[in-house]
Image (cartoon, rainbow, N blue to C red):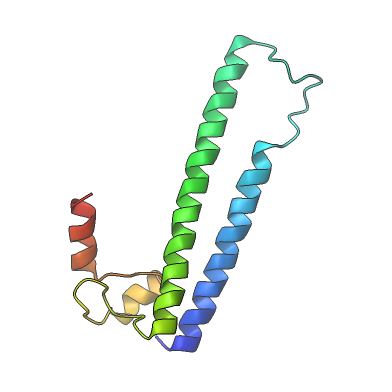
Length: 116
C-alpha cells in the first residue's frame, strides 16, 4: 500500500474513532428525561450501573484501537509500516486493506493472541 494512501486511511480511521469516543462519552451524561436524579425504583441502580460499565468497556476498546492506529502512523513515519513487528516479513496488501493498522502478519498475530 502506498504511504500516502495508508496515511489517509489511518487518519480517517483515527478521526472516526475519535468521533465514536465522543459519542459514547456524551451518551453517559445524556438527559434521561427524569424529573429527579433520585432512583425511582431499585432496579434503576442496576440498569445505570450496567449502562456505565458498557460505556466504559466501549471506551476502552475505542481507545485501544486509537492507540493501534497511532502506532501504525508512527511506523509509517519510521519507514517500517507494512512489515510485521515480530518477524519483519512484509504484510500482504489484502491484510492492510482490511486492517490498515495491522502490526503483525497473521501467523505472528495468532501467536501473540495465544500468549494473552
